[in-house]
Image 1 (cartoon, rainbow, N blue to C red):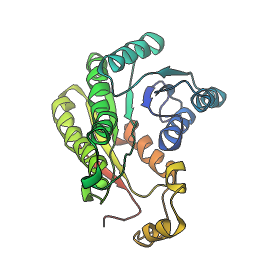
Image 2 (image 1 turned 135 degrees about the horizontal axis):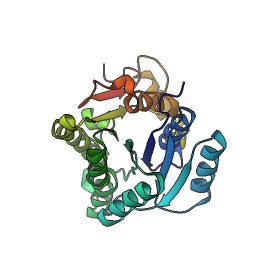
Image 3 (image 1 turned 60 degrees about the horizontal axis):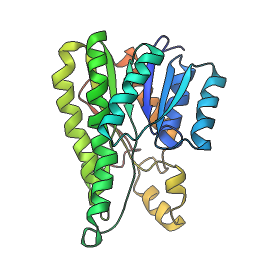
Image 4 (image 1 turned 90 degrees about the horizontal axis):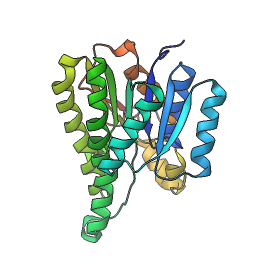
Length: 248
């Protein structure tokens, strides 16, 4: 449908799973795509080639989103190569799950840095570009556990809850500049990470979901497309749950 014709999207952590699904859908809808990944691996290069096959201008940048200076530089590089940034998708994330009584400082710091600080880093850099353009859409990847909490994930839950507060604050700061900021809170999404879970655990999760199935990366990507496009031109500061009704 060409919902993103003429737009450039910067997506962090887009070589697999939800990030890749968003990149592919955006490319099909006409966007040019800048991807970041912490390593220049085969999966990352393959994703860039796949986007080019679709017909998009695509380029990958090796950058650690958790590092402030690297994030500032990658935004400069994207503007140099693409001319603008219309959409920022803060998708990079990791888990270091364990009960709080066993959690190390390193496990806490790593998750907060990659999941939460990266959102500050990239948004801080991209927002200046969007202000000069007088337009932009920022999409942050939170999680239902940022709302509900989850045993064994106090670090991950805290990082995703922080994203919610950050999103609402940025929306209030930038709305007058025609910049929107929203977040998506996925539930149980079937990715490489969740596929490794034991079958009884996956069944337990599915039984809690009113729609009685896990979500797909494409389910999340569809919501990310809505938030990136002009279909959501009057939507900002919102947290959209893509969870099959899990938190209903």
